[in-house]
Image (cartoon, rainbow, N blue to C red; front, side, top):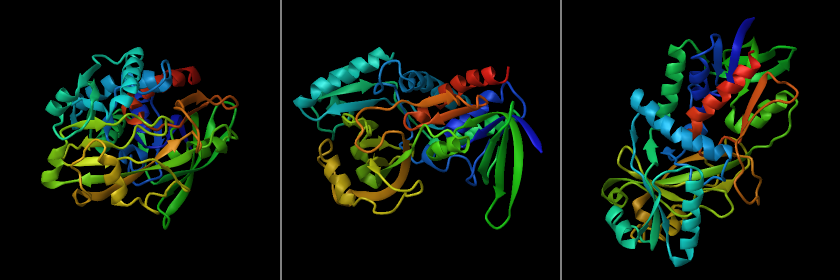
Length: 375
């Protein structure tokens, strides 16, 4: 039976960033991922935005880890040849009734330590984004775009180079706690040719994304329930992609469900419109009852009146691991905690946006928790 100091469940951006951080300090680090390669779920089915930290309640984990992660993500991308564009973004008030919300967002961002935020008027909006209609906007210069897929793979690659073992096609089927270890049962391989293996780990890190609640349940911890929320995208290609230059956001949903359907100029020159936010049944429900393109067009016209339905084509969809049930109001924070009954286990639950941005800061945070386990 294999022995490990640390076993990380989940090869998304959070798990891979943690593997990179802990393998700097400890040997015998394993990361297990059920898909054929890291980052095939939530981590790469998003807008790829390096967020600033303006949206989240003061002193929340989301606020602190996003602001720190924004800087660390740019540094990591620059040092490891991950494509990115540090372009800034505009959060636009469509009419005068939204201006107080814009001011409140600016203050929240400043309370969180986001620097150089400023309000601009309609004339400056037109200089930056000639086709966008709005009365005022919050200029957020620290925001940017990264290649989410290449970022995940870079974290995994660096972790592997530091001695970590990244095992794909590896499904966790059991977790059995002992006095000082957790025995992890794994089903490794594809459906036709799989074998069961066990690893005794001194520390298990649950970074299982959409399935983090189920992994916690394997240890008898039923504190959390993940509610999958689907976000869908449309894409504009060709000459009409010139309607957007960088990143343009509306004000976020007042209920905290999402940041709103926004415009993202991609690294490959198109622009994305999305994501929407819809609670769905099933943690692999990416395609059932997709929204019609007309629904995207209608929402986009508020800020981009020139957009037409014929400009859009249906894009990909992603699932957010929400901790908030339908009807909940407000932003729910990340959960990053040691299990009260199995202290060798660290759970990360509800790691939705801004998880991509926060990942390196989350990894440092978790690394300090691992130090407490492996004393």
